[in-house]
Image 1: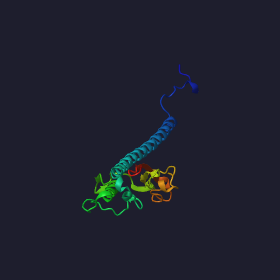
Image 2: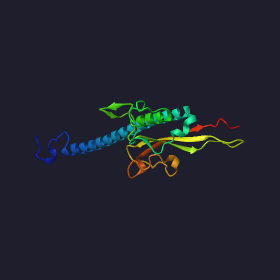
Image 3: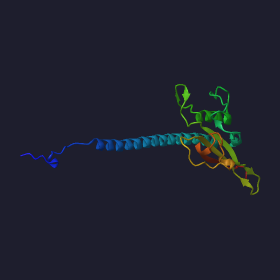
Image 4: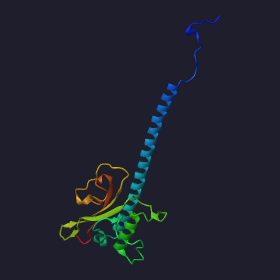
Length: 202
């Protein structure tokens, strides 16, 4: 015989609306976290790509400078070459030779001329620039006063997010300072030195 007592009613099985809403909220937070992670991964990949391209550009110029040490002073730049400079796109056609040709081709490489997409150069870093300065002038006045020449080659570009400001107080690492917005936290910099030994000193 069935009882009319309220506790004797059959229990309903299944998922309540509250449980569904809680589950959806948890899933939404998880998906937002995944989306944020993917964004950071994409930024990190682009930063890595740009640094790899900068290393290639840096290596190209240090090799050219090392191969032409007799004319090393001709490689020193008055400012930054690359993005925004007046170097021609066709360096050979412009009749350039020696250090001038090397600097022109380096400028075009920094602008991304190695790869184009839709008519735009995309084969390098964002706003890539390069600088070459003489850190130490060579001295070859014997006896015993021989000093090798030291040149610093730097490559700078715009990062994907602000980070710690690269050192730039000293002129040695000041390449591109102030060219990447109000804060140098967007500027990325790598550099290498090329030593030019003296050959006439004994």
